[in-house]
Image (cartoon, rainbow, N blue to C red; front, side, top):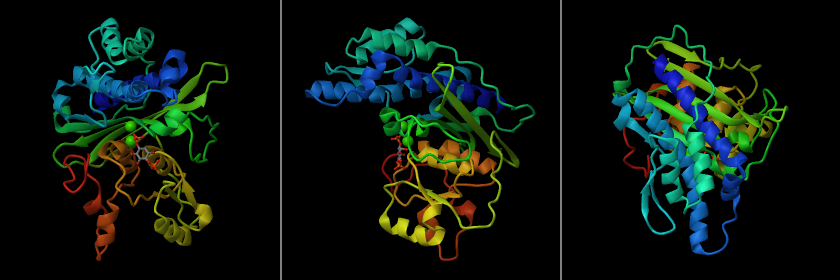
Length: 348
Ligand code: 2IP
Ligand code: CA
Ligand code: CA
């Protein structure tokens, strides 16, 4: 498990590099922020590029995990499909090839022959990231990769990523929107029970290097299984016993906002972007709870941060099931799992 954790931290850092490169390199940035105007072909091309950043990151993670742990191959799921139709109507399957040049050639066929953009992306995909230090010494969990599956959200809060507003974060403060809400999420679950056992979160835009070195990221990780709980973060301290603080989506239903305003008080109700970022706020103790009444998140949004929460003694439960149960279902009966489709829902 420690090997898998080290690999995921490394590949999440590579993913963060790709996300940063797409904003830092002018030919890629122009594609990312280009207004969706003009003819349909142009609109589709720009749309494709936004999705391409996500697809490329997901495929890179899949490629690297499969190379080191072939037994996980059929169990690496994610938000994106790797099938693309380019501007000429040709179907292209995006994969990471054996060499940087081959990957660049393949990407150019999706990017309608834009070789500059394709080469820049391929370089980031094939580049080795800096080594990520994580104190995983002594972390022994009796699980083998053949028992595990993975959920990837290559970039969560894409809208914030594309809008790109820069905030200077202060320790202990929640900033509702901006580039820092964009996260790479990689969650690991147990195939037999669906419980989330390991999570890696990379925040590619955590702070800007004052010496002009560009954006730097931050990573978070957690492992929780069979009595072993380890996390890069420490358990948030209990507040002074005051009111509960809650973080919500700004698009949450008015009735939920009203109910929580009377429970928490208006000053304890905070709105923030990104499903992953909102769970990260709870992990960091910036809010006590994140409540979501709409079915607008997916397995790939919650799997990774859920594992960190469990490692800290928290969890993620199904709100509807909790509310239905008149006896007040116990947490573990309503805790989300990641191994089976929700038959009544669309998507994962
Ligand atoms: C989205 C993203 C949105 C979130 C939505 C997710 O994922 O995290 O921000 O909505 O639930 O599915 P909100 O910010 O209102 O909570 P993606 O960006 O990957 O599509
Ligand atoms: Ca998402
Ligand atoms: Ca996403």
